[in-house]
Image (cartoon, rainbow, N blue to C red):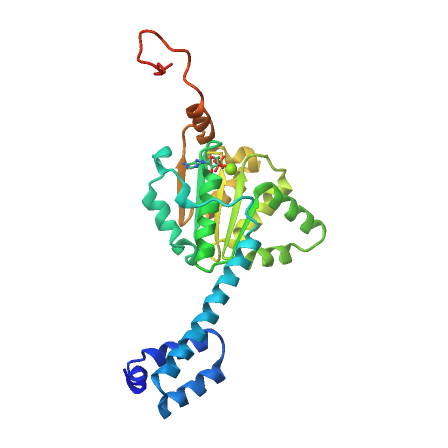
Length: 271
Ligand code: ADP
Ligand code: MG
């Protein structure tokens, strides 16, 4: 392929031009356009392409590593390691759809509701990991830490600054909402936090509480209704009900109970 052809079909030169713009190097892009018109040997163009590809790759890797650090995941969990057969109420296809990151671009909410040990935090972090792979900025925080941050910020008159800080993340993961009841001030601040992100930024959260019980934690019924209205509008609710995965796993690892002579060796009778 001649250089002219490459330029004409926006192939090689077109790619180089797009990359130089992605790298914010408009001067170099203009120079390359001139080179393309002059006609430069294909080998030179290929070399240039290789140099740019290497730069883009290394930037992407650094961005991924930086975003992974700033996400502050307490532990790394991958969706690939999640056993969907353990939670029949959560179809794998729904989680795969969420993993595309479209809900993040659309500033939607994901709510994972379920008993302790059913894999809510695992899925939450797994979704966060996928978003980071898409180049998105993610932050993990537990609800109790978030409440403490909000209370401190209110005392220091810097709520707007804290909201701007979280506003810079495409996706905020709030873990364990509902484990600890809040006082009225904390509930109001959380309401403000979620309202601030409503329809402008994506949020995913986990809770052990069915929606009907949220008033118990938030105290005020009117505010709880308003909060649920914001959170559940255009949201993806996944219910993970059932037995704790941890319990099930440890039971599976336990040695079989003393053999019953009437049953085949090692078989455990259902209790
Ligand atoms: P929750 O947040 O609902 O209390 P976790 O996500 O912390 O539960 O899960 C508890 C432990 O069990 C974690 O180590 C998690 O990786 C594992 N786990 C839970 N559910 C599954 C599952 N379906 N497949 C694989 N691991 C799971
Ligand atoms: Mg959890």
